[in-house]
Every structure is written in C-alpha cells, then in structure tokens.
Length: 243
Image 1 (tube, rainbow, N blue to C red):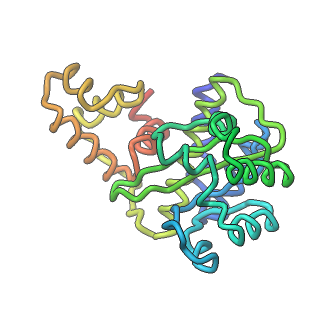
Image 2 (cartoon, one colour):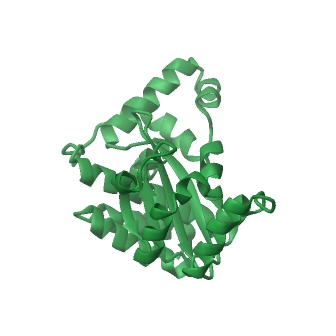
Image 3 (cartoon, one colour):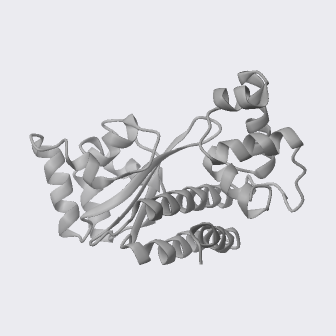
C-alpha cells in the first residue's frame, strides 16, 4: 500500500470515530507503529497559572498519569523546551530538535530527563492554529521513535486531522457536512495548498489576488468543518476533492 493510500485509510478511520476519546485511541493505534505511544493536546496556560487550573487546558490526553501529575505539579510547562519550540514554529518537529538547544538550561534539561524516565524519550510535536486564532499544542511521545522523512509527514498530517476532529467532537461545532459543494476555485486553491503553496503563490498561479485566494481557502475550510488549513486539505482528500 502506498503512502497516499495509507494516509487516506487512516483519515477514514479517524473520521468514523464518534467521540474525542475514540479519536485519541485510534490515533495512537496508528502512531504506535512508529513508536509514538502517548498523546497530549491542549492550549498553553499563561505563565504562573496555578497547577489546579492547568489541567483545564488539556483537550486530549493519553499520557502516563504519574508523568502528567509531575508535569503539572512542578510547573514544567514554563520550562519545557518542546513547548518553547512550538511557540516559535508553525511546523511539526521532533523533540530531539528542541532538546539540542538546552545543553546549558538546567530547568529544561530536567523536564526532558524526567520525561525519559517515563519512557518518553523522543516524540513529534506541532502547534495547531484554529480558525479563530487559538493555538493548540500537540505532542506525541514514546521510548523508541522511528520515523522516516515520509512517515514523519504522514504522522504529522494524520495527527493534525485527528486533533481537529477531536476538537469538533468536543465542541459539537461540526455541522452536518454529509454533502458539501466546493466551488471550482475553492477546489483549485485546496489542490495547490495540498502541495505546499502559500496563499500568495496560489494567487500567482491562478491569476487572482492574494486576498481572493485567502478567501477561497477560508470558505473551503469553513464548508469542510476544518479548524485549519492542514485539516481542510486532509478532509478534501478524504472526500475525493483532491487526488
């Protein structure tokens, strides 16, 4: 089975999950094949937020319970290099990339060391930015993570779709979207977005203004019930608008 077919199969599995908990379970069933056995997704609390309130920021969690308790009680979110790295990037990365810059930071080193003690030695993380501008931090971890460049892309896309799907189920914001009519322009913009073109690049390719290409993508995301551009592309793939 090719990588595209695998991605399509995984997205279909996640689409049929009826609750956020089932989304989490199905996602880990997929990612565990690559050594990613634990998941955490949530918004980042403001520095100094009391430990008792930090858990309110968690949207999805299948993390070792003792590690979560330690993470919250020791306020690790303010020192976690993975969280810091996510704040600076808008793209997926492996934990080891964040860890490379902490050699002289004792607090950050303690966070990573403790994570390793709970069999979370490496992982994949990315920020998911919703349409209303909310930033959700997503982190998958495990003891022996094995990801080729191609698999990294697959897991990143599927994980983004899964978290977006879980958020839909959490908020019950997803409307009935059994039949969606995308305009030809909306389809074209999504097709180019799927191969990594920016709004400006899409505008140049299609001979339209950048504002118009942004509007087409925003309309497509809204119709597809997607929380961001990546999930819109994944949903469009699942529905056959992109092939």
